[in-house]
Image (cartoon, rainbow, N blue to C red; front, side, top):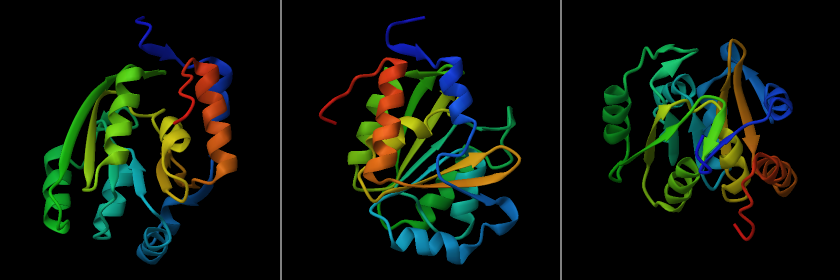
Amino acid sequence: MSHDVKPVQKEILDLLRKPLGELISYDQVEKHKIIELREATRKLITVGDTTTAKVISFNIVPEVSVVDGFEKRVVSSTSLSRLKSIIAALSELELVELSCTNQPGSISLEVIKILFRALMSHGPVLIKVIGEEDLIALPLIAYAPIDSVILYGQPSEGIVVVRVVNRIQEVAKHLMRRIGFNLEGV
């Protein structure tokens, strides 16, 4: 495995199986809740095909969306081209499309570079991950602007809402350092 790809240790994977924020069960995810989150945040970020499709179904465009084309290891019911066309139709700004590679159970330096680019963008960004996006919420929590909201799927349970505040960001940065990414000053 390349030095630019860091496998995530089992104890960290075990920690990440628990929600890093508030878990909203799928049947409780409602448009008004997502609108409230959107209005109270600097950046709304979604991770996962199901989560992204759900938010977009409410006519809400996240600033950053990360997808891999799969839901629970099965091809996603919402195609990437469909997501792109819906975002383009809803947004007044041009959609920026980025892609990167990420192996299962790891986080790559390529992913982190793409995330930084996306977080600095002024229009909606759709990141297509070739491989797996399951762990990408962690670097987003670590490096998104304070007061961002990150939504990611908790398989078979619901959507996790992470409000990026100093405390949770420090926890995420600590875990990123344990994985092997020391990006101080970011």
